[in-house]
Figure 1 (cartoon, helix red, strand yellow):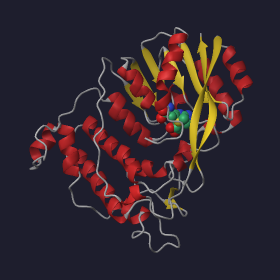
Figure 2: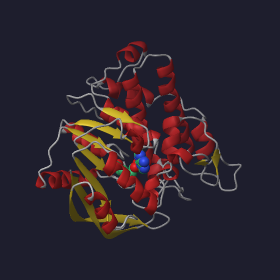
Figure 3: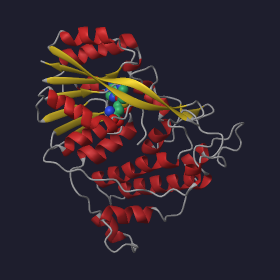
Figure 4: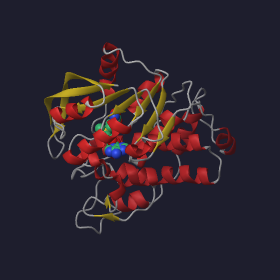
Length: 353
Ligand SMILES: C[S@@+](CC[C@H](N)C(=O)[O-])C[C@H]1O[C@@H](n2cnc3c(N)ncnc32)[C@H](O)[C@@H]1O
């Protein structure tokens, strides 16, 4: 998934850096989980994984990839649906996804608030999704919820289906990367009919845990050999930038506002890492009260916490190494039209107690 700070392409480098410093361990806390990609990687390496994020859509992904630890068969549901898959060898998840791809569209909260037809009364009608895709999203979201209420899917099955939706929606959103604005013309991707995509199952030997919390509040609860910190690195809060994924995941009919239909209330999802002073204070709290052997902080040379202050805080608790590597980031202009390359230095601060 496209996500600011997604570490998918850096995972091998992070792991190599850990090996070069001889960092060992069996348990791993992905403190700022986002897409859950980091937790997934370490789950595959058979670490006991803990993960958390302030955002609920991230929690949905964590439930599907980190917490769920079994292949799912959707037995109750498939027994009930009188539905013939087009594929002979389809997996149970694939069959359910295929079923969801042919249900009747519904004019629900997403269609009514984020498509041109639903918002034609506004001065600037919202063009986040095509009329057709807005209704498809509503239909799939409501169907998944109804199955949960009727108890014909388990908790794990529920979250895996929601994760399929959260992972699919970005491919059809008419945006430049974040949901803080929509394009005023249709991106060709956004006018294609949405087809739900199945996700993967990751299974390891542990009882992995995930949370939808300010991770700093979990310091008394979670103990792990490695704490991996990948906080926001500038003032931009994540909640408004991903408000639509949050609303699709929660489907809670929120009060919304402004041209872009932002969730009006995200007070409890504001991160202290988006301000230099509070970020440094939080970092110190984590380093001091966390129960870990190794703390790894992912950051970069454009971050709002200055390097000398990070090092000075961490050094009070053990030996600190800084590993840097060049990373090419692609930046779109404001309208998301073109991309230019930018080199930044990705940094790993490694604190060993
Ligand atoms: C740089 S992103 C993490 C990206 C992630 N490593 C990935 O690969 O997708 C930072 C994340 O931290 C979350 N966040 C910010 N402050 C937090 C806090 N105090 N507790 C938990 N999550 C927080 C944001 O919601 C965001 O998802």
